[in-house]
Image 1 (cartoon, rainbow, N blue to C red):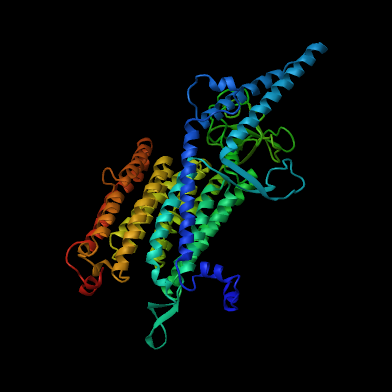
Image 2: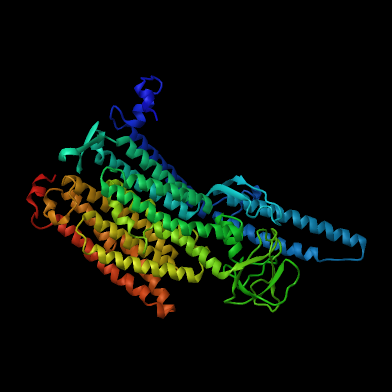
Length: 632
């Protein structure tokens, strides 16, 4: 875009052109990108510390000064919010009682109404305090608003919003992505140094008369793609709604296409980029179906609003604990029709429909208690009305969202694109496999975990189980050092999905974080090996490289020990947590024993193929003397 101005010798544009485009070829663009991602890491780490401090110790701004100075146990932000919610429940019970008081005496009736008004004002103040406290780490605004006619709830299905919400998961993932991204950016400054040349000779592409293809260096372009890749992933992590997630999801997809096909003159790289892009579009088709179902029935993309409508509240409006609090409430239609526009549901386990709770919970009594009186749902609900949706449709919505995650996180049967993604530069492989693209699918499953029904979670568990075993068996026979790590990534992602599917939410996401670090280490180490061997990736031509690159060998050994689950390395803790979660699941569901056997066997296979890779690369005698002589 700036090249015409540069060629016209525009003095105003020349400094910006040199900084962003790298001509004359300099590292300025790279250091801008490194500084940006490093600053993001510094700010995110500060934010994580502040968030954790508030989580454990928080000064309630609603307390009076003398109450603040009283000796009382330290309370975190969530405890303070919980205390205000308990107070709000008490006020709702008082309001319900006050509204029910009737008197024939005019003076007493007026007194009752004054009391009702006072309680209502206190309730509104408590709700405003709760909203203020919850909004300390969240914000959103309307991006698009439409106003269709004939709907009872003007806020339902009429607004698309953009916003952010920071919780422990988002804060931790943000720190992980920015830290790993910073290290990969720094590594890339040296690894992509060849692209600083005005003319680069590609030895894998032959032009006319058999000569090697020559092209212009793309150093600045590489860092532009990397920066956009990280920005897209970070926006996905902060999003508080599925609409914003989907926008970032697609940005991540296009960045992966550009980076995998960075050497697009190579037919293999161009095919790999197309394969990744098209395979992910298959998954995204399911994602879109899930989004349309949720927006049609729930009228919102916001995570908290979706969960609030699908899952029963813990307490009713009188403060009574509900037996099905936090669960799906199911029922079956009865023959009775209370009135036009209404339907009666017989609340019972295994019902054909799921009760959708009101967007505004002013009055809530008895739902999910198994009472004889059926629940009444509206076909065109208002903000305070119950509605329902078929249970199988909710299952399809969850599986649709998961299909998008299957594509992004390379799960069976959409795993075929990830090994071919090795055609991109090695720093790209490290970023895709460790901190960005494949992590997005696992993160989203964890983020929308309350959306999944037990049937959907079982599908997730089996897909993860199949993926982890199949990928490990392929990795056992690979001879390309990057392909071994690629199939290893697919297998480890299967571990994460299986853990989430069996209910091990913490275990699956814990393994996601630990895997990001040791897999980034392994990919950057393999990049050093490939760079030192003049871009040779075949392990059958290596051997004996420990003497040439001992630091690389030892650092990669640490990564191998971690991914193998050797005690006191990070992978030991996270992988053990995954196995523990799967064992707990099959202990209660013995007919699903395969969900424990597969990860147990695959954990052993992982140790085998990772040590095979390390020994083939660094130990023994050189298998190709030419590669060994030129290694450095």
